[in-house]
Length: 347
Ligand SMILES: [Zn+2]
Image (cartoon, rainbow, N blue to C red; front, side, top):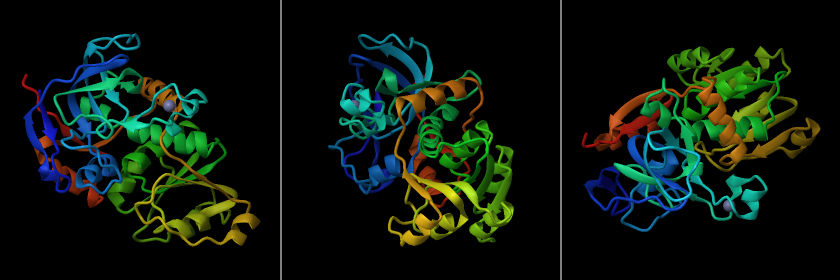
């Protein structure tokens, strides 16, 4: 097969498309013919650049979130058949350690990642554990399929498992036009919550409203905390859905109602914050961190994707050879939804 091979960390055009041995699925694994794969900031772009904190041994095939067709089964696979259209979870867990057995696959003691601890999906074929698969509904493309796993499972864990979202809640979604924000809006609406979406352009906010947001705030023209308070008659929101960090922290806390919960899974806007502990305890706030997703979260996403309740949004599809352009869209925050690369097949 052919694959995009990384021989030196650094520039995204360091990848070379070359002939490599075909992978073969081990026990519990399937072989996927890859049609499309997502481009994720940390898991793909920063991994290739060498700034992600992970340095897999080189040469390496990146690509954390592929989608395609199951073409062969390894020993013991019974949950999926040859011919199935599937997308793969970037995060991999062992299923047998104490954390996995307690239901915390996202804290697996032997955690790994596709395109990180093992060869990834920027290749014509990739071997993937069967437990990491999410079926793609017939009305979704491979590109749309590749836009599902990371965003929707991370968002489910953040909003349902960690924030414990309720129908009575008002939820403030930051970064509403990114993959995670688009998933968060839909999940909050699935639970009947009222959603206030925050993004940096009118076009992004238009899409947020299409997806179900009840109110939108352009953070470039408005102080989002003041607007969140105005929209809740001065009370504040019950849940802030954070994935920015230092750049938004003060406003996020100011947006919260008494007993409000702030959940966070990202720090692309800076990792270090000042914190008024007195305000925190007097207003009885809750702060919860979130990383990855449990098997239960992933299964809920499978069910709601299959039922058509959750729909990914693809901003653009690039040929894999144009990965640097695809990455630039993400790094410049132009995307509304996920950016996807198509994998060239010989057929
Ligand atoms: Zn484990």
